[in-house]
Image (cartoon, rainbow, N blue to C red; front, side, top):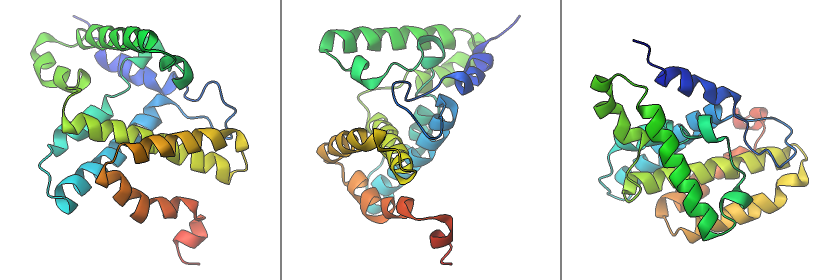
Length: 194
């Protein structure tokens, strides 16, 4: 019997992000997912250790690792299209869920129960909200990278993503902005204190 789940996951490296924008460095959803996973781990740690929360760290990290799974079938739909109106947004959410279900069904039945809950995340959970915040933080950091490289194409995106992040009123985001975002403005020599 052949199981295709991990071959689908491996295809994430072929799906490009930021398709409507000129980028100085291309990014795919596999590398994006890895960075979102690291950022989600940071946010859940801040949530639990700094603000006394009780979010499930493993669930948060695994939600993040699989958060773009649907895009191996749907591609990365640009944000202006995805959120153009509620009708398109709702239809796209259904399409994403369908793609995830189809991909999960390519696992051996004995593995599905352990992996499926992370691919088909509980969107009403605190863990999911931390992953969505991490996803936006990754986009914001991409904007900083592009702007630092002289690419003004990302100016408007940086502004709107920062507004979105601030409007979430999440102390974890504010903590990350205060303590970690300034380092993204530094060169390697500056990070190393040279």
